[in-house]
Length: 210
Image (tube, rainbow, N blue to C red; front, side, top):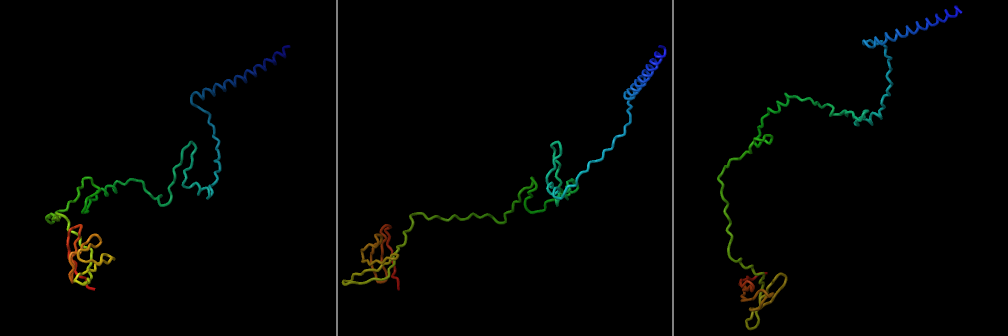
């Protein structure tokens, strides 16, 4: 009975020792974390994932089009060609040199708000143009639109004149009215007197020689 009790005591002592070691390790670990210490751990190096090279067709399709970045943003487009050589840097010395250029033209400087227009000097006295005199009174009567191209003499000395009005030919004696407009006043060998009835105007028409 005494032998059995001694074995159980040894077993309890061993368990208590193991528990004490575990408790001591936990206390040391907590103290190290509280005072800033941390067990150095070696990070595991991760090998970068292999990125497939873009094919020429995919590169041509994506050229000139902004690439979508995760998060809704867009990547700026890269300028290629002749525009790629533009220099956006400001050069104050070049600007100052351009501002120092003075206008040397003869006209008005359109780049200056204080420039006044050039007024040419008068080289000769200004002369007033004469005002044309407008004739007053009634207008003169129009010319008689008849042509006298011959006559004939009948028995007793009566004469008849041959008159042309446009394409129409009239044979009229003294006192006859031609085309309801003209009256034959007198027939002579070399002329004929015609009265323009509406205008009360008498004109002498010469004989037209054929």
